Image (tube, rainbow, N blue to C red; front, side):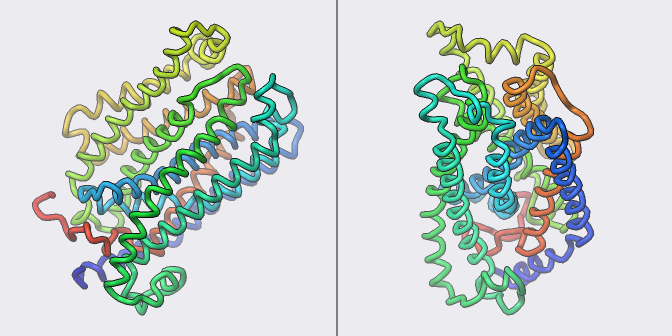
Length: 413
């Protein structure tokens, strides 16, 4: 790696203003304070509902960012290497997610009907609360540990050899560097950890989908519901990477590293996975029809044919599939930054509403959106962005030590 490029990338960390971190910290504190205030009041159910929705949404995006990085490693993809570190930065929210998961199980009586009601056998066996808490906490903890090791080696690969220029957590990661032989060893370790992270991602987030969404309705069964949730989260991560990378590109002066071809390809991925998302959605409805299972239609009918949720369901389909798929057909819309940011933002909005439509009708017959729900959602947003900014302030925003990173783009490629 060219020393000038390395020093340039390291210097860009200081361009993230500290006031921005404090701003999002304040937003997070306000949101969490609102949640605490409401759950100690007379009607805590609404606060717990929106808490669960935001946990599923933001945790999914955070972990899927690391999954995007793992996929780039496994496939030896060179095209998106400059986006690798930004994708990994989404995972900075995961330690908070683990705490939030414990909070959810602490309030299980308000948001998990099977905690206080008995479903028919054999669901009672699967939904035994001890078993539910154990499998979700343990699987997510294993995933968190694997992700931490993966990030450690990914960062050490970049920071090795420059420990004397670093302090704090980055300096600790870079300490004791033994040279290029270690860089080669790290490359092999990353190739081993990446598939392990992906496998446990599928396991842990399938548990989340089954236990925190699907099982809220005792009559809804879907073997595709796990993939529907974690692939939807991956779609959300693609949109988030597009938005955050474009903002950092301007703020940190990364125009020579993040060029139009990157966003053209990311736009194609966003378009393709929006099509895959609607395929997963439709595939869950087919067995109800061809197997003639009317007992499962209540879940679908309540969401797509009855108000107040029917309009939201159509909004989800429009925001996540119809609009992004059509809007991303022209090449211009993939490379004009304000346009692709807007398209990604619409997709993310639709994915958030999707979580709302999946969770709320199982717990309530009406839509409750007020200042409480808005502040709690903003609190999650504030915590997510704050952790991402802390990550980018501490570590290089471009994977400068990666063997497949080609330096500054030449000729737009």
